[in-house]
Length: 444
Image (cartoon, rainbow, N blue to C red; front, side, top):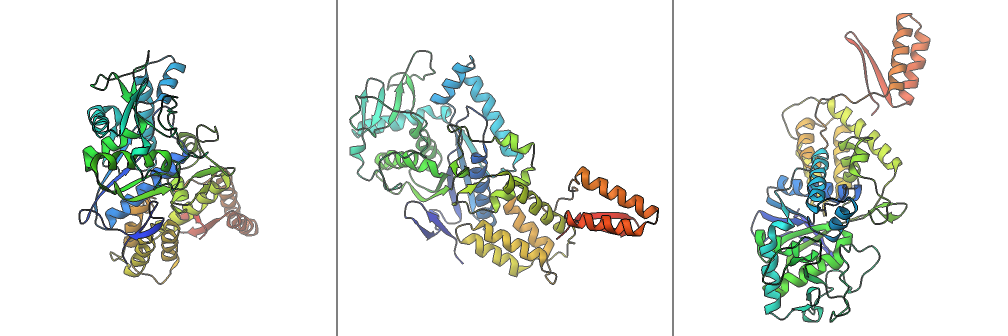
């Protein structure tokens, strides 16, 4: 089966064909580093981590590029609030972001690119838009004239903002030619960072950072662009307008991929709404593998309603799966049937839930051979550490029941021992009494 990807641009699944055979250039919008990363970030970056690892599993040579927005109104605002230099804010939260990604096992990114390292490329793009008479100058900077790009709105199928759109900067100026025109280069303001240029001292607009970075690494066209659903408009729409106007080539990107919102109480989880949980806070309660299991259980394009119940269910399911896998011996062969089923599910627009169900079917199949090596291959994609031998932590209350049962057995109170065995079973734990001692594992 050929790999099919749902492209936001066409609104349908398309057979995947990269520009260069067996090579994939993939870009995902990274964070603005002014605060701790939240679970919405975790969803997007974990799910793209799984996607990229699957592409590599399929034999593609993937260059995965992610930007870091390290200059922005939000960064400047946070620096002013904390009475510190903006570079200190960037340094702190960029470091925290990388720590979160490492903790979550997100290690598929080939290159991180800081926006401020690409000012020459940004300035070059603005200059080319000016030369083409697509960019114009007003009192506070250079803007993109939307009337000069007739296809603006082709990705989002609209040209106006909606409530869930991510807007990093409010480019409001009554001098603008059109209300939707966005800023390419912002002229210097007092007590704000700036860069000297032929355009006038200033700093970049939000949208042009990404096209400058991707043009530097990939050229004017590449294979896959990803990000959260909230970035479709105006951010990704603006990227298309900028780069296709500069190059005269289309499409900028062959496949646009967008992750569904992580929601809480049916509203998008976001810092602006104040309804978010940071990755660091959640990792104090749950393992990174439990978090990955949550996101592997949901289709990347679908919204996911976040709750403690979902996390608790994922924790139990993950621990049960890991416990079963821990008992499987390596017979040094691969079960081609189950591996093919896994790939069939993933080839259908990366259907994580279906692929995860294939894994469960494999471990539960008592007649299946080649379990260990097949689990190993599947887990190289999911990143759940299913075959690592660390012991699953037993809760204190369960340990207490185990100790009470051991005491009953020593006293030859077999009735009480059996009753406590049943209590453990009801809690999801099974007991095996062996010559080497009592062994406990999760019920299958």
